[in-house]
Amino acid sequence: MTNSAVEIQASTLAGYADASKLRQVNDQDWVLDQAPAEPHVHVDLGSGIGQLLEATLERFPSLQRAVGLEQSKYRLREAAGRLQRFGDRARLRHADMRSPERMDLSPDLVTMTSVLHWLYPVEQRTFTWVGQHMTQGGTFLLTTYHPAQDQHGLGGEDEIVRDALVALGTGREFVPRLFADHDVMPIATRTRDAEGLRKLLERDLRVVATIERDAVVQVGSAAEYEHFHAATFGDYYSRLVDPGLRAAFFRAVGDAAWRRQEEIGHVSSMPVRLWNVTTRG
Ligand SMILES: C[S@@+](CC[C@H](N)C(=O)[O-])C[C@H]1O[C@@H](n2cnc3c(N)ncnc32)[C@H](O)[C@@H]1O
Image 1: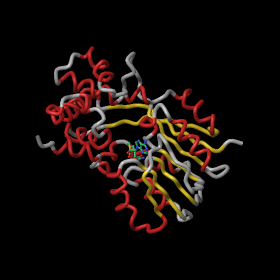
Image 2 (image 1 turned 90 degrees about the horizontal axis):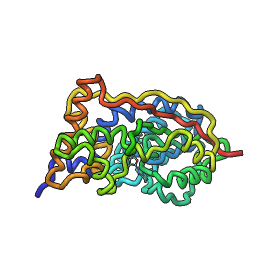
Image 3 (image 1 turned 45 degrees about the vertical axis):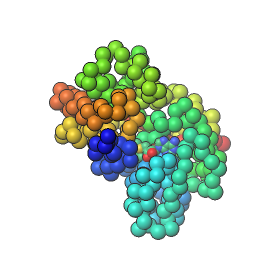
């Protein structure tokens, strides 16, 4: 059986440059406004297709080197194309931040945007890594999304997926069980609450300040959301359904999002928190 275009998109996380305009790219200036005025070495953790590295390299002439650490080979390849024009100032490395290795890097600016939920429950390893590598008094800027959770730990994207599964015939009450049976941890469960996160951060680092705002996602069509979901979440959720139903699943996610857009004027709205963190002592 051949895979549909959207399944191929999901398996290669393609289309993120367009999809991220709906949410992640909107955080970029908000984050970089908190960066030091003249950073020298920037490391971006979970650097995706290199958009934030591109933004810092353009914005900060003081930057001698910007390094992206990323686990997806597809994203690394796309980032390499995007950053080629910066020559030696840009570097990319394959890395899994759930088991980060010691590296010969001393950044005075570290960023990690829209990534932390993927590292649950071993986020501490990344915070320890930052504490070991960042220069004394350096700046670590971290964004975390905080969807509301129901009693099963589902919230945010999980809710849109639940609507899609129901539209495909699963009883609403069976959805939490389906997640558990397929080892799909709800994204809302993957995101710790602000107090829990602060405690983890402060084992290795010091929180200087936090700011928060609402991230609102709006779309102009069901297809637009279908592609946003495939580019952002890949095949994480689609394994909840049989292979033969996967194209229908992505379509149903788009339709569920579009129903919300028409009913309440947006697909989702949730707080996003920006943590400004430095070294201890
Ligand atoms: C939603 S994207 C965010 C990309 C970029 N930071 C941004 O703000 O647009 C999440 C990124 O984290 C990467 N990622 C997820 N788990 C990771 C891990 N364990 N180690 C390194 N990167 C990871 C994904 O491949 C993806 O590129």
